[in-house]
Image (cartoon, rainbow, N blue to C red; front, side, top):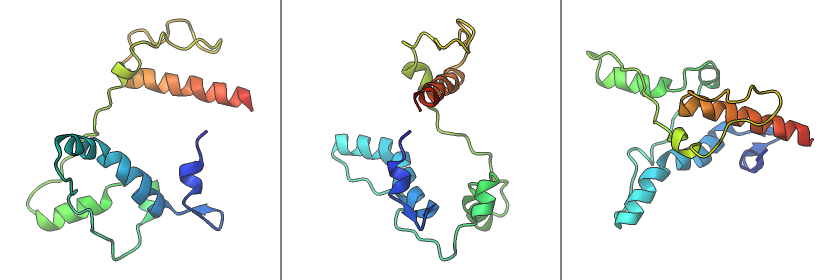
Length: 138
């Protein structure tokens, strides 16, 4: 298990979720744009990349699944006449990533159990198999 990114943001035995998010997730979510712009020789500046909150994040709301509450509130403030659309997640090319993977081989899995699954479903099974491999290695 890769824990270094979390440990980098620990203070007094607890992860600083804001620092972690600002470092790891911000870079991860912008990487496709940064790479494309760098390849094209264009300078990239993400919208609102220098914006800072003037109040602490509401971690309880975030942990309860309301991860975009700030974006929704800003949208409602700016466009009160519009209903906030549901967020569509960024697609992942999991089917492409796993096209050469023949499915899980551990005895806990039924042979060919991933046949007919979507890329995202196969990804979940792949992660479960890797987790079980990791647990066995302890």
